[in-house]
Length: 356
Ligand SMILES: NC(=O)c1ccc[n+]([C@@H]2O[C@H](COP(=O)([O-])OP(=O)(O)OC[C@H]3O[C@@H](n4cnc5c(N)ncnc54)[C@H](OP(=O)(O)O)[C@@H]3O)[C@@H](O)[C@H]2O)c1
Image (cartoon, rainbow, N blue to C red; front, side):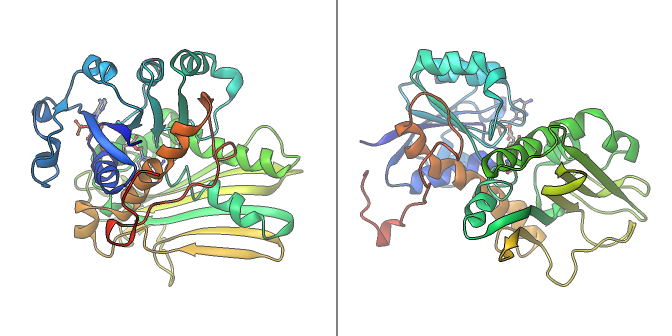
């Protein structure tokens, strides 16, 4: 049976998810919600320069809720729990890169109730968090023993991330150091990464302090820097490091870190990615130590990244690859710890080309 899929929002993740759904042998795109009025009523294929595909974008949430569909890839700018609840209650499973990777089930009564009412499942995924942060470290940890530290770390040039609202309001670029270091930005970002750290702590059995440590540093521009959020003026935030850590007796046992830079020039302090360049790393300290470096998740050039950023594409692919497993799962919130091993699918020219 083909699985009927809806895409919610057509930003970078949404557009890549639509392409992944079209390429997936088990999935069919049946609806698309858009935030932008200018996209309402347009054929989704034309919005993506693919030519018409017969699916018309709508700004109407009611129209999407009324659709006969099995799963929604939910990737708006910011999560709205009421929307997710309505989708789940309407009988649609939800996969999303905007949260719920490892939610506290004791604080998720409304979602769990909607899952029970709709017979549906919610799965939070992504890449960082939602992959590099916890899924891949947990997998790699299985080939080590007596583990004393688990680290995931991103080194990315954020000039290639064509989502100015996310870069400014969620990641905190182009604002004052005080604003970047303060309230909502850190809390918004930290919520996701901390949940991932907690997942590793719980699954691997670290006797860690319940309070996680959040560390952040900023580098400011020393000269104007061109970026997707506009010119970053001297004194504004141009590079960021975050570390979220679980500690045992003051010693880190799980660390999730990001290094997000608008280039590698004109910073104070003068940070750089070093000779290895942009990458993601997963490192397990144990018997033996194991380190995995992921390349290919960052674009070769800024121009390429602004058109189709592999980091965004893999985020979308991770959502879409999960769909068949999420649709098969029992109702409720299901994390990587609950679902079977998730895999991608063969390309049409080398695959069976039919729903399994
Ligand atoms: N976990 C991960 O690893 C990961 C990785 C990348 C991104 N993300 C998250 O995924 C989400 C989407 O990222 P993206 O790169 O696709 O961002 P994006 O390119 O900025 O797209 C966001 C889309 O959301 C819609 N939108 C804009 N303003 C909105 C509003 N006020 N309310 C509701 N929707 C609004 C728009 O959809 P239309 O164009 O359809 O109108 C917009 O294109 C973000 O929350 C981001 O933080 C997570």
